[in-house]
Image (cartoon, rainbow, N blue to C red; front, side, top):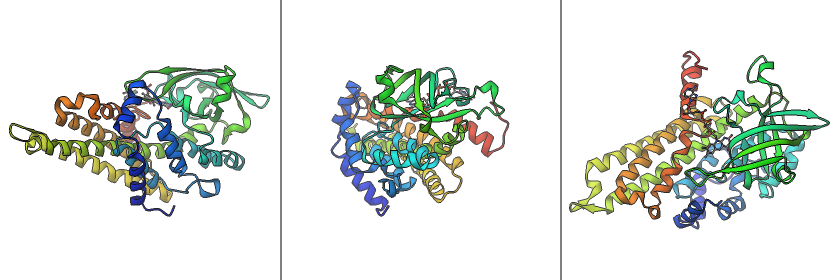
Length: 384
Ligand SMILES: Cc1cc2nc3c(=O)[nH]c(=O)nc-3n(C[C@H](O)[C@H](O)[C@H](O)COP(=O)(O)OP(=O)(O)OC[C@H]3O[C@@H](n4cnc5c(N)ncnc54)[C@H](O)[C@@H]3O)c2cc1C
């Protein structure tokens, strides 16, 4: 990609300036999807930037994609309605066969089809992904799927879902990570035919997420990604990208809060002086800024390792943890700085405050990141 990160930042800022806080506030109130915003990102080629040029994308690296998501969130916009396409189609890129890539990637690149839904979480399994029970049985060239997923986002605004299922029961495999398979499911067709039921879940943020019931849903065998039973390793290979990109959104959120809080601390005067002159107000903002900047260094390190083809799991996990905690710290600091006005919807802080709580839990809860670092990086005993 022949565009500098600074140029990317300014292009995204420019795009986002057309989607001011009142646009997001209205959608938030009505729990509606930012269709116009996602279309603008698609038209600009930003959502398909990781797709190689030969398939119609921009051949960008993760470091550049990270800048896009960071800048979206820093501008007060929200990347979550569109971000999944960046990492879900990585599975097709890395593990799909040539036919799948030729068929799908150009359509994704032009925005003709959306691959925005990623079906992993199940009600009983929760964070323990290898305990999922949604099962696909291969008969006459079709996988027939029964089971249930929960908190599956953007199902109603996606054409395809990347879905992980069991093709061999957990009790029948030697390693619990075996027997899982990745499939690409045609959501439009399966919903229309009544083989998938979708029940929206209202959450504290404007995030289209759903319970999904698979009632003999069908996926042709040619829509399997990679080999049957190897889906867990394909899933893991995409998770580092997901962690780096989510960390970037958190960094964007954190900087949004710092920008707003430091400005307000200069402008708002009580007791005859700007509130920011009080170190009780000023120091927490400075501290939160340092946390964001430190997590940003870890994110940059993770992204450059990934783009060089080196191992990036430790750094990607640490970046996600540090950035999500730093964004939450900044969110609370901004709330304190704005006093009562922080709670008023029209100021914008409370919406972002709610939104910045999600990455502590999803797509992976921070406890699970701590457990990864404790066990896999520091070699301490496994707890599960
Ligand atoms: C708005 C939203 C959107 C989402 N979108 C998607 C999506 O598109 N696709 C998808 O597949 N999923 C999605 N998720 C699901 C999300 O990934 C899960 O909520 C998350 O992985 C945690 O799983 P859980 O909620 O079942 O929590 P649980 O696994 O039940 O955990 C509950 C709590 O216990 C802790 N815990 C559990 N086990 C341990 C342990 N061994 N040690 C220490 N602590 C532990 C966890 O850290 C957590 O704090 C979404 C969730 C939300 C809220």
